[in-house]
Image (spheres, rainbow, N blue to C red):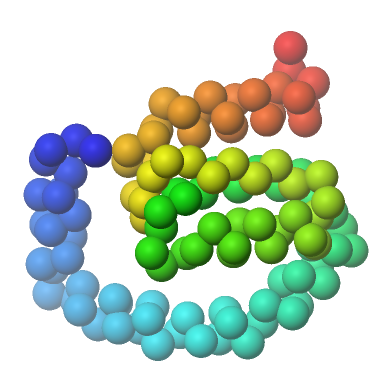
Length: 110
């Protein structure tokens, strides 16, 4: 992660409306959980191409969450990376390569 990344994050968190926005997101998360069966049914029915690049050490979104997608989309590609919650910050090049390869194969871009 870039050493100055936290400065940018902090800048946006210190905006006047940031606390309300964060609280709204946290309080609304329970509506996501209630809709999980709907999301899972969609995935089972439509089986969209699915790539999950996930931090193996993410304390908030556990690896089981990524692995659960494979039950709904059997050909899902699940990659558990040596990363935490901010996997995109710490494994950006690795994730970009996974995405590029996934799109090459799924969109026949080669």
